[in-house]
Image (cartoon, rainbow, N blue to C red; front, side):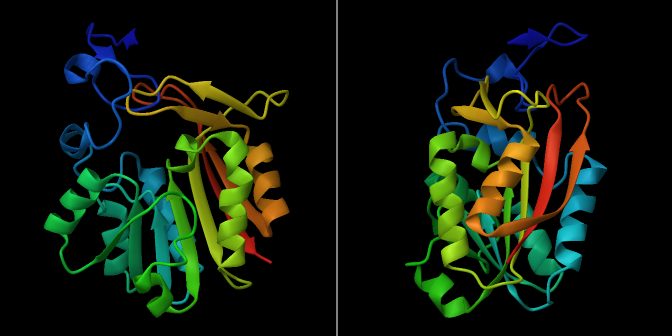
Length: 229
């Protein structure tokens, strides 16, 4: 916990004011309403939108995008407005309840970061042209990341685009580091280490952007794009 210039407590890495957050890491079900109030729209910073624009511009319109860790669904629906079929996946039932209530015509699936190959909407969708994972892989223990990425590769075709966004670790001597997160356990990744994990799973890096910390974001963040070979 730290204090900002006005003396209010803030939660490192989350962008959430800590004054009305329970102690510990209660999870996204417990904090879904607070999260929804704190993040009422899809973008916190202009680059968030620009990186998703760049991701979407490389995909065929009408194709299906899987939004892994979709939360309350704002970005999933933004992509639907751009002409894509979208499927939002999240492990939090309460977050999905909010998404379903707000966007009832969209498709929402309860699931973790692994590719939801057994879900009927995914089977019916045909080839997935893109996978988006914005601040969701940070909650996957690093030892489990290779299995998650392998599941993505096993269920996609060459040319599938991936965009992963995460709090990053600039220290080249370390691949990962657990960091303080108010909602759930979380890990920062060295961008090159995560790019290597993607490469080993079958996804070649196409670009990355590193965003410097600011008042609401105490860690640098990486937007990392890759394509299925």
